[in-house]
Amino acid sequence: MIPNPFADSALDSRRSFLQKSLALTGALCNGAVIQDVVAAAGRKSSRPAKLIVRQKSPLNAEPPIADLIESWFTPTPEFYVRNHGSIPKLAEETFRLKIEGLVRKPLTLSLRELTRRFRATAAVATMTCAGNRRYEHSKVKKVGGVQWQEGAIGNARWQGVRLSDVLKPAGLKPEAKHVWFDGLDEIDHKGKTISFGGSIPLAKAMGDSKTMPGALLCTQMNGKPLTPEHGAPLRAVVPGYIGARSVKWLGRIVVSDRPSPNHYVAGAYKIITEGVKLELAEAGPIYRMPLNAAICTPAAGSTLKAGSVRVSGYALPPGRPGRTVARVELSSDGGRTFRPAKITSARREYCWVLWTADVPVSAKTKQFIVRCVDSAGHVQPQTVPWNMKGYMYNAWHRVPVSVR
Ligand SMILES: Nc1nc2c(c(=O)[nH]1)N[C@H]1C(S)=C(S)[C@@H](COP(=O)(O)O)O[C@H]1N2
Ligand SMILES: [Mo]
Image (cartoon, rainbow, N blue to C red; front, side, top):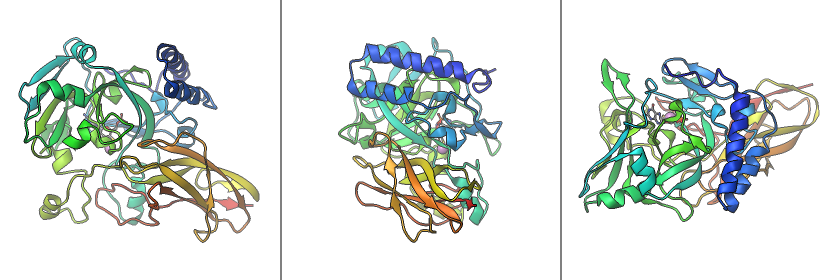
C-alpha cells in the first residue's frame, strides 16, 4: 500500500519543505538557489493543499488553480499527478538502472553508484501534461482521457545527474540518434500489461541550451527525495518537453537509431483527428510543450463588483531553447483590446511565469481573456483545431464572469 500523500497534514509537509529548502541554501553558495528559496518562502498562504482527484485508479489529480499560482515553485503536495497505471513501490537498495542499446559498454547502476559516480545537478523546470486544459477540447467534441482543467502543470527544482554524463562512460555508437526511457509501472492496455515508455532525440538528451543541462535523471524534487507518485526512486526530467517524456520509476534506458516503439510514443501522444492507422503512422511524436497561459483568479463564474479587479495566472514559454515569455496580455472586452499584465516571477527558459493585472470592469464585462507572446514574437493562438486525444490545448484562455 502506498500512503495517500494528500491525506496527511500538508501544512507539516510544507513546513518541512521550507526547512529543507533553507538547509539547502546553507549548503550551496549559489545565488539562483537563494533567490528560488526566497520565492518559495514567500508563499502567501498555508492552506492545506488539496488536489482535485480526476481519476482514482490510476490516480490522476490536479490542484485547484487558485492555489497553484501562490508560488513560483509548486510545493510537491500541490503538484499534479498523472499516472497511466498503478504506482509501483520500489526498494532503493535493490533498484537498478540499466543502460543498453547502441552503447559500447552496457551499464547496470545502483542508485548509490548513480549519485556517487556522477556530479550532482539541479535544474528548475516546469512540467506540464500534453493533456493540460483538455476539457476545452471536450466542449467542441468529447475527447477521451483525464479531463484536465488548467492545473496539470507545476514548476519544481529537480535534482539528480545529467543523462549526458551517464551516457559518456557507456560510449555512444555513431548510429545513436534517440534515447528511450522505460518505466517500471505496469499498465493495463487492451487486455495486455505494458510499461510506460518515453523517447527523446539524442541531441535533446545531451543538452540543447546554454543555460540548461539537458535531460536529467532525478532522485529529488524540491529538495527532498522523490515521492512514490512522482516517480521514486528515479525519474527522467526533460525540461521543455511534454510531461509524458519525463518517465517516472525509470528502470531502463535504451540508446537507439529510432524513437521508441512503446505505445506512449508510437501510438499515443500524437495529434490525430480520425484515429485511423495511416494517420497514426504519419504523425510524429509530440515533444515540446506549447506556448500557453491561463487565468487562475478570479474563478470562472465569479460575480465581481464594478471597478478594478486583480486578475492573476501563469504563462508558459514554448519548450524551445532560449525562449521565454515576453508579454502577457489581458482583455475584458471580448478580445478587442488587450492590456499588459505584470510578470511577477522569474522569467526563465523552460519555466512558467506568474503574472497579475488590475483590470477595470463594468456591467458590460462578460469575460476575461489572457494570451501571451514569447521572446521570438510568437503569439498564443486565439483558437486551436480539435484533436481526438485532446492534446496541446493552448488557445486564449477565457474566464466568464458577471459584474454587478
Ligand atoms: N512510468 C511512468 N512515467 C510517467 C507517466 C506514467 O504514467 N508512468 N506519466 C507521464 C505523464 S503523461 C506526465 S504528464 C508526467 C507527470 O508527472 P507527475 O505525475 O510527476 O506530475 O509523468 C510522465 N511519466
Ligand atoms: Mo501527460
